[in-house]
Amino acid sequence: MMALEFTVSPITRIKGFDFAYFEGPGAQAEDQKLMRITVTKAGTPTVHMLSLGGWLSADVNDGFVFSASHHTRNKQGHVRKVITQVLQGADSIEVAVIDGRNRAIVLSATFPLTGAQPIFEALLKGI
Image (cartoon, rainbow, N blue to C red; front, side):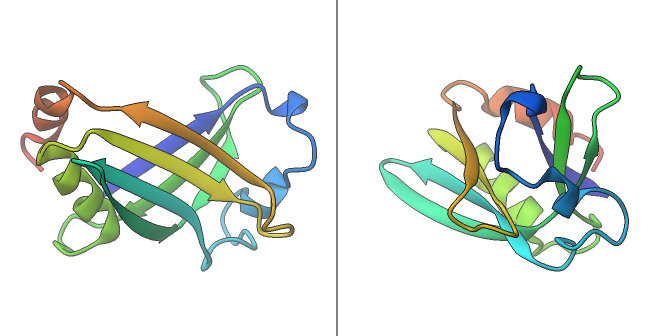
């Protein structure tokens, strides 16, 4: 299985976002595409909408992990498409999680990727 994870912390300071909507097996968010990944290359954005789940982080104090995944046998899955775009020289990736109860509330962050392709290639060896 391959996954994209986005950890947010400290969640106690984030008011109004319903983390419980995403938490655990059988979460209300389970079959909804509430994670928006925007990969930008040469000024052109490509948007992917993914289903996701989440859990309270055991590794990050007061953190919550959002995760979108698929089995690696599915070569056309959105997670693999995102990673492929990153490996093809994307300039940045924006991760946005839309609150399932109030879609006006969005948690998002943009990460520059210039020079990161060798790191991703090393992570993908053997997959």
